[in-house]
Image (cartoon, rainbow, N blue to C red; front, side, top):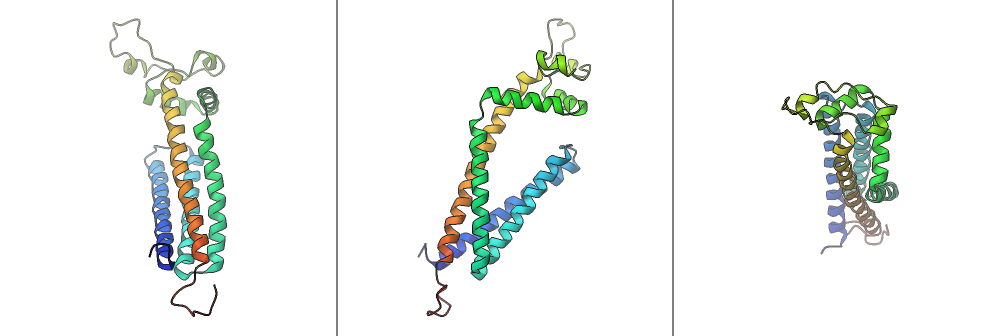
Length: 215
């Protein structure tokens, strides 16, 4: 019967196995991105690796607690998972609540902080030149000589010009915020379900144990 000891145990084990798979995916993405030079920012790679490793440790704690029905392990797992739920739910709501003006400000700050090689990579990927007229007066953009043929393949067209990167980045940034927000909400609710499962499982008695022993 679902909701019994065995069902709660199997559900908690399956949830932690899912978390372990997600953690290995995060670690694999970080390692591949660094090896293939897709991500050149070391703090970003380190952050993704740290998230994957922490998720593995928490999942192993929950997995061992579920298999052994260990009260102390389950308690710490429940507390940590609830804290993660609060943090991830808050971050997801913040991502979904960011408006277009705030996204533009974040993009502007990011453009000003990165180096010229990163700006050049953005220009090549999005086929744009500079950020916008306001920012370009403060931070001169890198050379656009290699970008012009991609933006304007017809040399005879003298009216053609590369668009600003801000115009190209707006939809991408908005999509990234919404995607991160919805994914964060989904995983935060799975964490909340994990907390509820853990609370229920801790308060149940193992039918194979001594019937007179209260857990």
